[in-house]
Length: 415
Image 1 (cartoon, one colour):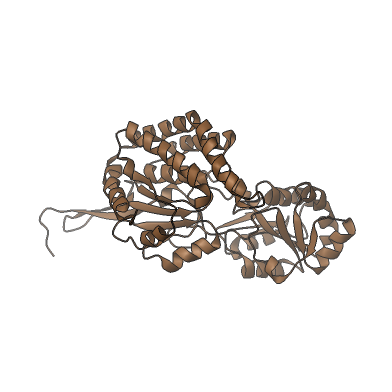
Image 2 (cartoon, rainbow, N blue to C red):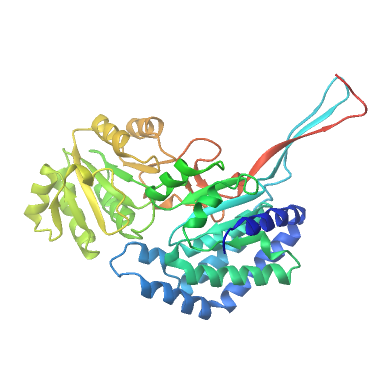
C-alpha cells in the first residue's frame, strides 16, 4: 500500500451512514458484536498468542497485551454496559425563539471520523470501536505492531458484525502497522476530525508535536498516594498495596508513596509483606531506605531523582518521606502527570484541601487510584484517561465523543 488516503476517504464516506443509524440499530450491532466475541474467543486467543510469543516476558506491556477467556468476557460484557447508556448525540442543549421569529437550537452531534493511535492494548480496539459507533462516529484505528495479529482478528469480527447488520464495514478500519502511515494519518485534515493518542508519553508527545488534526491526549499516569499522619494505617496498607499491585501495568496504578515522616517508622514496615508478595522493587529516599533496610526488605534500592515522576507500569514504586501536607502537595505538583492522586487521612480539613488544591483529572481521599476508569465511574467503557483540560478530562468516554451544532430555522428573515 502506497498511501492510506483511499482507506481514509472510505471511512469518511461511511461516517455519513453511521450518523444515520438509529439507536436501536446501534444497540443491535453492539449486542451482536458481544455474541461474536464469545463465539470466537478460541481464535482470538490463538491470534493473541502469536503476539504474546513475540514479546519478552519482562516487558511490562505483556500484561496489557494478554487476552484470555476472562478478559474477552469482560470486553463482551462492557458492550452491554454501553448500550444501557443514553445516546449522546441529538441532545438539545439550547432551545430559543428569537424576537425576529428564528428558532435557534444547539444540539450534540457526532465528531465524524475519530482516529485513535494506541500501543499494545487490544481491548482498546473493541472499546474504541463500540464507543465511537454508539456515538455515531466512524473510526480509524492504528494499533501497535505488538498487537498486530490480535487487532486484525478483532477488526475482522467487527466487520462481520457490521456486514451482518447491513452497515458499510469501512465505518471501522484498522490501518497497517507500518510507521510511514502514521504521519499521513496525522495530516489527514480532509478526512479525520480528531486524533486520540493512547499509550506512552513518547507516543503522546509525538502525536501532539506532529499532528495537523486536532488531538485529545489520553495521558500517561504518574500517580501518588500520600499517607498523611492521621491516616488509618490498617486501611492505608490495603489501599497502597491494591493501588500498586492489583494491576501494575495500567495508567492508574500507584507509582510513588508519599509518607509523613511522623508515621514512616510505623507505616513502612506494615506494607513490606504485601509488596514483597508481588516482588515489588522499592526505590526509597534516605529516610525510607533506612527504615525498610531494618525490616530486611529484599527488593530495596536507594532512590535517585529519576525515580520520582516515573510511570513504572510494573511491580516497582518509589517512596518519599515528607514533613507534612504542604511538602506532599508540592511534590505532587512537581512530579504529577495530573492523572490520579490520593490522600489517606482522617483529617477532613486536609482531605478537602487536597481535593481543592491538587490539580489532577481524578483526586481521591481514602481510596485506591485504581478506580480511575470509565466503567468504575459509570460511563461504560472508555477511550482513555484525559489529563488535559480542553473538551475532556478524566475518563474519556461516550459523552465526549460528540461536538455541538447550531440549528437555525427561519421563515424568510434577513438581517
